[in-house]
Image (cartoon, rainbow, N blue to C red):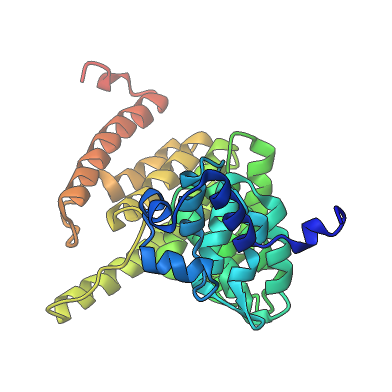
Length: 325
């Protein structure tokens, strides 16, 4: 009988059992959990599927720890073998947040029986990443990369980009591995992600003192930022209302950094005269047509950096007359 008991456990039977232990009426449980009385009645009778948020609310009502009964929740995610995105995505996110890997793997195995469900794993990764939980998102992007059949799809390329960003840390060797893994896919990204990808690649190369790589990424960043600027300016000029390109930083940052990073790479190679030529590219960006308050603040930063770097290059070239200034 004891051997059979775990097989008879179900989400609702466990909730019913603890409800009896606490002596809670349906009305009291509704009040404690914040779940509508009618909805709660339907849920417990099996007439309505339960969301993971509702299960968490019940766990709080019964003073149970986070992740209570999560191992019994997967049945809520599938109805007649069809997956419910509104329930499975929040469930996987919560499992990742609280470290319930034991609950994630069975769901993933079932989802991957159908290729179309790779998109669910990508959605989980995206929501975790956008919520600042980049480390928790890593396994989901890895699953997308491993199971996406079309390596030229936007989903595949974005997963490579997110994985690159999520794995960057303090370890130089690991960061270089991340660069090597991501670099082949940088041109397959949509332009808004390409801009940030190139900026990150150049910055990592700077930290790793890989000057020729840094130059290459800075050149690509400068050319792409110029192209995007021209396109955005024409679009804004020809349309009364249009959505601006969504980028992590203001567009002027990518443009200015293309010049600044190029100069820094040349400086580190002792090419001070060549480096000075690129200062002009970010010394005065007031002409940039797409500036808002954030953009104007960035332009002022570039002016300061340009002045400081020009002094630096002059001094490195032996011109001590700039010292008083």
